[in-house]
Amino acid sequence: MAILIFGDSITAADGWVAKIRQNFKDTENEFITVYNLGVGGDSADDLCTRFDKETQARSRYGIEAIIFAIGVNDSRVEDDVNYSNPERYQDSLIQLAHQAKKYTEKIIFVGLTPCSEERTTPVSWRNTTYTNERIKMFDMTLRDFCRMNSISYVSVFESFQEKQKHQDMLPDGIHPNDTGHQLIYNLIQPKLQELLN
Image (cartoon, rainbow, N blue to C red; front, side, top):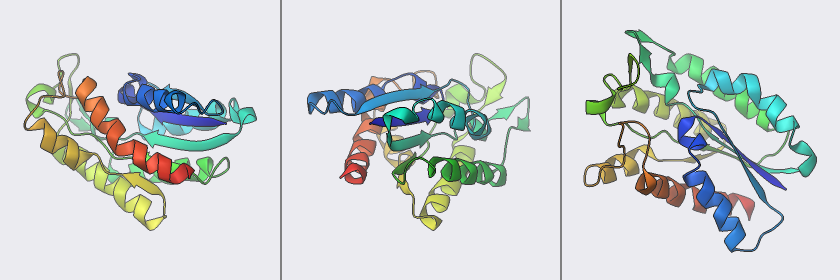
């Protein structure tokens, strides 16, 4: 059986995802394979275009659960232009949930992580800005979508932001370090275990 984890660069970094994979190894559950399908820079729109093909390629193993961690890039502002808006983001969430339900009812959407604005207005590598106000707006869209559709949602923003006040977990302003990934894992793992049981 397979667990497919889709997301952006925070997923692709294989921090919290690797911890989930290791958890199954530690419990000697050799029947679960965890696939990291994160792609740096992906938005929800990008994920919609690749989701079905990448899931079909692994469906012969049987899909136990699908986890989505997507949306931070949707909130970005490039060259003073909003990349997306909550309505467009919600349309992508509807599409992703619809596609995922063809493979499994065990679906989790992971809430968005905050940013450290002194490093993300703009980020150092391009003329792209992230703000907590916009990230939170998209996170609330995700939370409300999951609640209305009875889909599992893992809240991350507030817990991460609170811990970030005392310990810097975002060295470049947007991507978590090991401590940040551990926190994300700690929030996701109980919900995943509950869903699998």
